Length: 222
Image 1: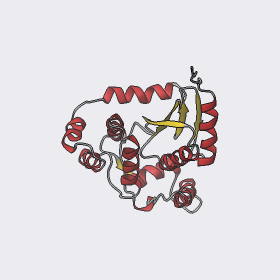
Image 2 (image 1 turned 60 degrees about the vertical axis):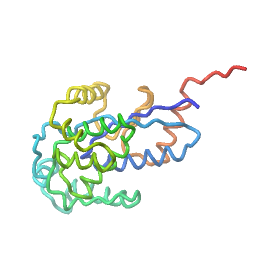
Image 3 (image 1 turned 180 degrees about the horizontal axis):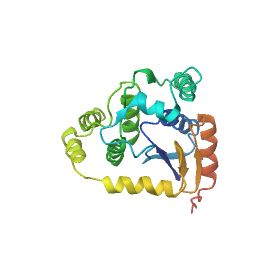
């Protein structure tokens, strides 16, 4: 069986991306006849966020307007909470107080992925931010999360304190923007076919099947 590579471009602070992770995993389970390699690529929704982060409520108010019943963010939040319940995702938006810079979290995902723990890192980081209300821009928190998924905490801590993979992570994020990715989550199969948005698992399963049909077929001899 030929392996289909799907790259999920996403940001840790994007609530739709946690939903998208669960849904692409659900889609993969729906097509057991296709072997899928799911890889994670960085994307920063707002690279201008300072290293120490900003106040979450102030940031969201500036982006979406004052919090009212007919506010766009309020409506989106309610929709996300409903979708989250369907996917067993426990968002706690009302308790989030800090909007971190997510760049170093992407570095952690990169290192975890190198040890085949990319999905574990993404899930742990989403949960840490949206449910456990942890500052995923803080190096100590990131080192703790690395240890929780089986990485060596001391090594992660030293890497975060250095410039390890800073340029590589930034170049990778820029590359996908240059490819036309301007919203997340975006799924790219074989660097040829893409779909954007946290579509249902059923729709993503069709995307996987359609992509698999365009893969070069292995020729059997004998």
